Length: 245
Image (cartoon, rainbow, N blue to C red; front, side, top):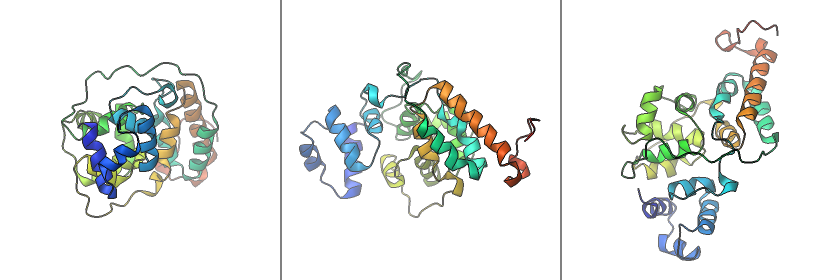
């Protein structure tokens, strides 16, 4: 989908005049300064609009480390309720490191004529890999899908439905109505989110600026917290690594 069509769907949903919006940002809605202003007005991350416009991410908006998958810390976040606040605070407190390198181009291009490929682009430039994407989808309301099926969605090869769009939107931190409009999916009523999905998008976004070593450190903290709060956990989510609590 061309960025002009993307912008029109987002502005139409808000009752804005797309041409007036374009004029307000100087006419060229794909200019870097305009994309930043549009993101602030829409309540989106600026990086997401750069991605959807097909623009290279400025250094200050690029993921820090191409190998750092923030989804690695999602399980401990959802499984250990007392750990959620601690993990999110720890991620936010981690110092910003220099850019390790730019993300390489995707192995397969995302189809411009497939609405679900919008989700694929957003996942790719968040550093969320296939397995993590499938897990995060489940944690955000489901359904459970294999990595292969999630990859098919990302490449535009599988149809979407309201539940899928709602769940992707939750962990991507994008308004559900916006993503539904972009994917041309009618969501007639709210689909309840799991309690543990609250704050998950913020953790995933914060993880986007971390290095792979910082993600490992955060995952190690999550493991420690599972032991610290062992007595408060159901048997099914307790850690059985053999370490004494």
